[in-house]
Structures are given as C-alpha cells and as structure tokens.
Image (tube, rainbow over all chains, first blue to last red; front, side, top):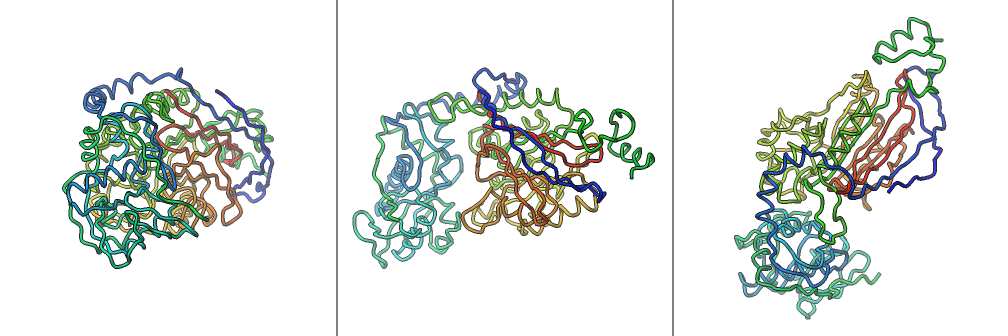
Length: 244
Length: 308
C-alpha cells in the first residue's frame, strides 16, 4: 500500500563555507510510507545463508509447549501477559522457597508485547524472555518494598504478583500484600531476577539485600513450568490502579 | 564572484559531475540532474529478527525479516549511486538466533547487505565484552562509538570513535553515542568501560569532523533514545545542544517515526532525527541532495515497512 502525504513546504537552511551563499530557501519534499505486503520479494541468497541455522532452530524451537485460551497482552499499568509472567515466576519460586509470596518483573524484561491465542512454542518463550537471567529469592522488609513499589509506580506499573496497589502522582498507595496492608517492618520473601536483584533498572536498593540464587534460568524454568499446563486462561486482575 | 579557476577547483573536489553549459549559473541547484544525491538507509533495534515475525496472529505477523530487507536494499543500490547503510544499535538479542549462535548470524547478514557502520546498543553487551570481542572480527562494517571509553578493555582497538566515508566526493562523517550502561546492563558485562557525557563528546567530535576534517555532512548514530519525560539525555536533547550534526539516526526507544523530525540546533540550524521502530519492520531511507557546491539542499525520505 502506498500512501502519499501532502507536499510540505518547509524552510531548510543552506550553509556553505562561502558566506555569499548562505541563504534560506523554501524547498518541497514529499513523504511516502510504503507498506509492503506479502508479495515482497526475498533475497534468495539470505534465505540460503540462514538455512543451516534455521533448520537447527526450527527443530528445537517449533515445539508446542502449551496453549493459550486468549491472547495475552503486555500493558501498563496491567496486562494479562504481566500477570501471567509474574504468576508463573512466583509459582516457580514457591517451589524453591515455601515462604515466597510476592514477585516483581521489570517491564523491559518481558520482550513481547503479546502472545497470540493458540499454541505457544518454545521459541515464543525465547522471544518473551531472551535474557539468560536467573531466578533469585530476596527477603525484603516492608520499607524497602515500598521504595521499590514507588519506583514501579513512577514507571507506570510493572508485572507483579502477590501485591496490589494504586498509583497516584507517580507514587504507590493502598498497597496490599496478599490481601493485607503492607507492614513496614515485616519481611517478605520475593521472587525476582538476578538482573533486578543486582541493581538493574536502577533498583539500587536491591543491591544491598542478600540473594539466594535458585540456579534456575528464568526462561528455562518457564518452559519447564508451562509444559505442565495444558491450557492457559488469562488472569484479568487489575493489580495496579491509576487513581489520578 | 566565481572565477573560472575557482569553479574548476570546486568541481575537482566534488569529483566528476557533468557540466551543463560549463558555467555554473544554475549551481544553486535548479537543475536536479547535477545534484549529488546521498542516500542514507538505516535500521535500529533489529534485535536478532532474522526471519519475519511468524504468521501466528500476532500484531507484527509477517513483518520484518532480513531476506526481504536485503532485496529492498539491493534494489535501492541498483538505482542509487551513493548509498550509506547504517544501524543505530541493539543488533542483538530477541530471538533464538542470538541465544544459539552468539551474534554471528546477525553480523554475517549485515555483511551481505553491506552495512557501512553500526553503533553499539545496550543489548550488544548481552554476551559481555568478551562475547563482543569474539564476534567483532566477523563484522565487515565499522563499529563506531565515541562516548564509551574502551581503553581499559580488550575492545580498545576494535571500536572506532568516528569514520569518514567518501561518496562521490562528498565527505560524510559518522560518529556514535551510546546510553549509560550503568543500571541497564549487568555490571559484569561492561566492566572497564567508562561512560562519557554524550553531549560533550558529540560537540567535540562533530566539530572535528565538520571543521578540522572538512566533512560535508555529519551523522550521529545514537542509541540514547528519542526522548524522555524527564531530563534524561536523548536524541532531542542532543539535537538541541549541539552545533555540527546534520542527522541523528536513533534507537533504543523503539519509536516508529512516521517521518523524520526536524529540530533546531544550538545555532538554529536544522538537525534531522529519524528512528525506525525495531525488529527490521521498517527501513529508513533519506535522500539528501547536494549541489555542486556541496550545499545541503533538500531531503526526500521514506520509511519503508518490510513485510514478508
């Protein structure tokens, strides 16, 4: 599809080392957005070049591991893909540490904007979480957790599990942890990636908190977990509410 | 006034241009046939999207893919003489091609498409400095960054601070700026690299390119991101606080520009910024027309959507 925008007349500054030639002139230019449909040709040489690697990856990655009943969507402040990722990760963490009750994932750590309805392949989970992040457990006090949630509020909301909150003026409020108001002095057991625990996304507060490494690569643990689930039904809870 | 001698000299330095009428009455560019056209093609944040997005009902299904992009680029090369093909970083990470082959596929394909240069995004450090060091010899294009100090790393001889390309007598200076890796990339993946303020560096390098090295056109490959709600340094901030950049090709924020945007620099001159989303869904194309006197004349651009 070709769409032509109206011709625009804009001033362009012409410059040159010779001072005589500096002048402003209206010149036209056109903008064109060409949407290329499925008829677009391939460079056959590229297809040949990638054939050996594609063959290997197809055999490993096109394996269906589960099915989703609906499209899962990543969004702010909430999304079904947000809840899905945080819930699965909390579930994995609980198996490692019985006390695990909350989970936080950075928004940028989820690399797909959606997972379509239907079969989910192993390759899809590679695209969802391509990083070789590990799952770690941290024991965090209520005070520090509030700081983290304030940061999450300032970012417009991240995937969370075991927590609900409101965002007002880019700050968190009305925080509930597993249904109870957050207690500044209580210690919560949190499932999180080593990336965040090591201060990724500028969460420096987490750096000082000791971490127990589960030894599980996030992506691999997800793939294993999802293989146990026949059908995924999205959790539509609104864990984060904007109340501005 | 132009003297015959001066004119001949100008022509000589801008390489062979057919002279119509011999005297440059129309040298200010009414006759388009005499323009030198510089065609900039660019990508950013391709994120290892080697194959088009699969036809699985997803929003981007059928889009992107190197094979259609390469065909498009080769077709453009067949009809455009002076093509520069550039990438603004995050070539890596996002599909299993990267997890399994550590960036070799992406670089091989960029070689085949004849990329001239790329800058480094934060995800180009995802297999650490050592992983990058292993892969760089496979890249036939230049890897350019000007604001990371690599002196204390094994990469110190592998990354260029800038490069000048000669296209039909036009001197095109290209340099690159990257985002602060602290708090973004795991520390172990970039230890030894120190970060310099991109604005200071951009002002310094672009001045050298324009004034000392007499570049006709200066391009900044940026992985800073288009713009932010806070005062974090971005392409917008860069454009407004520098003096010698003509074009910023951006990345990081995965922003799809419908068309390139124009900003005024510190000296009220136009700086063009463009960014083409991510995953190789779009190929940016900008045609800059230069007259015989190497003036920047006007540009014509199109952001091409690549679908399978």
